Amino acid sequence: MEQSEKLKSKNQDKSNLAAGYKPMDSQDYGWFRGRFPTERVRISGQISDDYSHDELGSVAHRPDILVHPVSTGEIAAIMAYASNQRIPAVVRGSGTGLVGGCVAVRGGIMIDTTLMNHVLEIDRDNLTVTVEPGVLLMDLAKAVEAEGLFYPPDPGEKSATIGGNISTNAGGMRAVKYGVTRDYVRGLTVVLPSGEIIELGGKVVKNSSGYALKDLMIGSEGTLGIITRAILKLLPLPPKRLSLLVPFADLSPALETVPKIIQSKVVPTAVEFMERQTILFAEEYLGKRFPDTSAPAYLLLTFDGASQAAIDSEYRYIADLCLACGALDVLIIDTEERHQSVWNARGTFLEAIKASTTQMDECDVVVPRTHVADFIKYTHRLAEELQIRLPSFGHAGDGNLHVYVCRDALDEPAWQEKSALAFDRMYEKSIELGGLVSGEHGIGYAKKGYMQHQYGPVQTRLMLQIKAVFDPLNILNPGKICQ
Image (tube, rainbow, N blue to C red; front, side, top):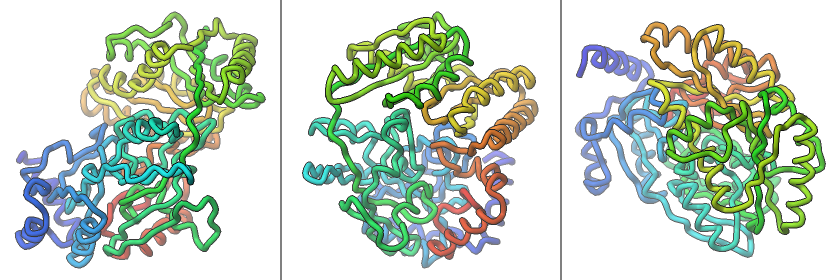
């Protein structure tokens, strides 16, 4: 272990003792070894470095023990033990987060739910699907679509788990028409930090029975309880879909067209924006050509529905509106091959930008749709001022923007200074425009200072009080969101 890592470890031990946490010892390791098969438990040096961080890696700390439970009962037993011994614990899915939400910043126990990956029931009569938390988004989509059904939330990372999506209230590209994850969660089975198991909601469509504890769990990032089963709302699968790729000579008219689209009588499934450089990154990353890269800026829109006639009427109306707003052309994506080409490229933007630089971090903000153009143009000015690359893309239809701060050739001091300044300035701008510091990726560890600054002491205090009710010992995912 390097000297700096030793120092961090010592500081962490002191901090944990000050918080009242018990350091894990041979007795604790023995309890886990006695209860779980050897292949489902890893201790300290046996744990892969992959479990010390999430997708971006900017927040890192290794847990003391990693366990792979396969049932609600096993998770309940783990948390009852952790509560009794006062050992911190964190739950993890695929680790695709970007803000350190699943990182064991206090060490202790990491509960990996990826073996709980079963689709338990598809109920066609009630239009619901019941799943375990480790089911991947892409596997859920395949399972329900095989039954002619549809789970609308569509985050870009298809290898994310449903438990993680619920924990961050993930949105995605279809939120314009269909909403976000919260709109599709009917019921949850949750293990509390004490090890108690509660059932929240169910297959019912309406519920006004007391406080909405189910909704409180959604977006809580594993700080209030551990989701071990979810009942999700489904819709009939729309049989027809079509996309439009709309090039513009400049970013401003492209983004200024979006509010006009939303105000029209037509509601597209998705309204995405992208710039040429980001598309070129995706082309290089995938080794495949995008249908068009001649223009500086693009809107990508999708329409779905029950009949081709209805879709044709909608897309023609929006195509004419885009052309009237200065679009250079409207490219119709009406075959499955073209659709996959365009949307697969869109789905790799994050990885493509990551591959273009030495290190990066993400600013995930949401602003009113009327201010999307203002915010993106501000990032262009900021990039020029700081002499740092800030590529972006996002869900223009709901104002959720993803801006990436790229290190490139900066040395460590310059990277720390410029990235911190870029984040400070972008989050301040989002607040100035009436926005929030996270649209769909959550707060985790990386953004908690920005959120607390925006919300102020009263809302932060209320969040801390809610946390204390569910987790009085502060053992479940400590150090995140409001702490």
